[in-house]
Image (cartoon, rainbow, N blue to C red):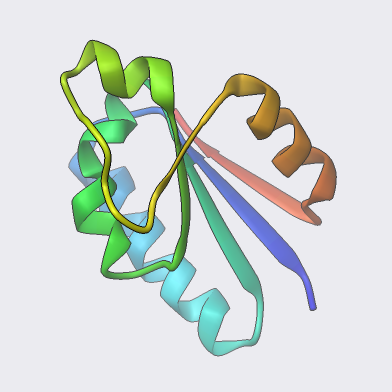
Length: 95
């Protein structure tokens, strides 16, 4: 099974919609889809949680934006992102 990692670094609604639709299509094809939200992308944690189970976000960026613990979402570090990148077969950055 392929692991696809979306790195979402934007608050552009079109790119967020693309991530939702493409991740759903990948999941239907049997891919393992993960999201890592950083910078302005952390604002969409609640919204994206409805589409993908495996979501991590930059804890520092979340803190800067006043976002506290969200059940089911991993508040992670940039180091964790580097591990996710290493473990992924395909990486899709949305900047």
